[in-house]
Image (cartoon, rainbow, N blue to C red; front, side, top):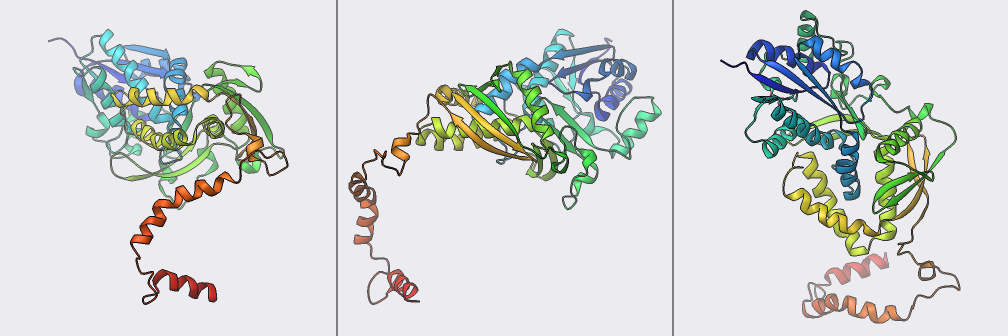
Length: 418
């Protein structure tokens, strides 16, 4: 009988390190690990060596940063996608790309199954498995964390120690951390108690506001069709721009998020996030759209932004809905060109200036000086037409306005008298 071969989405963290050994024991299988570089820093150190030491037969390390930024992050930024108006979804955006890389390796290596290290009550299990279902429906998906005997991270740590598996997590530092170039998600440990403020040791890439500089930092970001292309006048590719902006914003305590969110699986969870560059770029992009988008487009796009964010969060990247929404969003971004200068100060982001050749802001129409060109007299006719439906309705339907009942009119007179 031919030996099974399983491709594992491997981060090098506690869960996936234990998974490699556990799958070997349970399925007597050869394990191929697949690790994607999405711009994480600490997590990649020593990963190939760790995978081999844990028992992997073959190790794949893939640099996915350029694809991640250009095909995933920029799409979400242009859409204005913030889950529940807050979370830039670094983890959620990375999962479909990691699943894609996992599937490609599994097919190349002729694996019979793929495995992930997502929990049975998390969102990531859905994201991985929905992506695999779309890209390679013939592949079996294994989710050890849903099936194995371990009841806690402490149990996993003991198993790792017994088998000589090198892991950084400990009972004293039980945080689960997921990092990429768009942000960091931190959960577990004391963070599970929403009444407790996050301890400083939980944060990975931002300083506290108290330790941030006492003088503000100004950053100019130039956009072309909704995509940031220059930082402080210097043209950069997406990866370099995000790396530098993460450093600048993180040093100014920008990007800390403490969120109780609604998970896809029906529970609320408390997690903290760090998204320095993402927080700045979403803010600047939104400010530029205020100047360059037509009112009706801007308002309609704001509605779709929430749908786009929910689609990402729920793991539906590889579905017909995403390219359909992308087509609308792409059209809206053709005029989102220009520069935004932001002021970063002790965790705050404020706009310090914006300009655009596509700006719909006309100072001569907006001003209250002698330069005003707005036709004030035209407003009278506009208001008559605009309020005509309201006026007609209440002329026909009195709705308690009679003198006998007084109703609203009587209440208004009484209020004014008092």
